[in-house]
Image 1 (cartoon, rainbow, N blue to C red):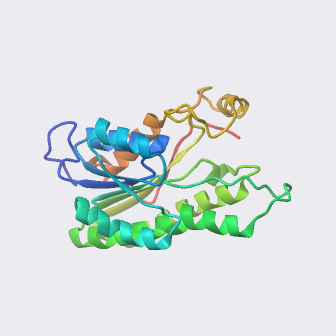
Image 2: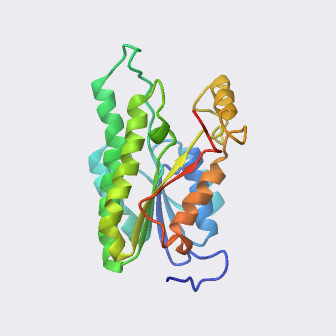
Length: 255
């Protein structure tokens, strides 16, 4: 059994956390949650320079810009993280993209689908594999991937996106067996419908949001901080006996 010797509320003191997708609504909330627990956070963003600056001011997180669509930049990111802070003890992959192209839309784009699979799955595997090398040496580490309720329930109109999120859950369940003997856990946080971004923009229309809320037991959308709290739990010492799992943060959604 592991225990934390840090002060209450600072259970991640002395740990370095790498958070991708930091300028997004969930990624930003994760940065807040981890810094509140004492971690040194390195946030990664591609767009949203203004939001990245705000996060730096709000949390003290160190911010790095990288385009994870580019495999070369993905490979370089861990080196830049080590130079900026240290090799990550915690990796939270909160980046990704959606792609609306249903089977009946007549808009299948093989190139766009390939990019989606790289960003949502390939780049995550690359980062997690690289980070795990150092974690294995230290015999401690936490890898947290951002999945989706769509990975289990499907998403009409976005079958490619749903498939990428299902792949993350299968990948985590598989590699957990390889990393577990070395004290490294890997889990997936799978949100359902989450409310608008802090800047007011939304991923879906207000009508779609209302429909999604009606299909939850709580009859509301989730908040980014509610997803981040689960990610922070998985990054901390209390989750030491939990690995290979997908935790659904979806308000009891049924669709």
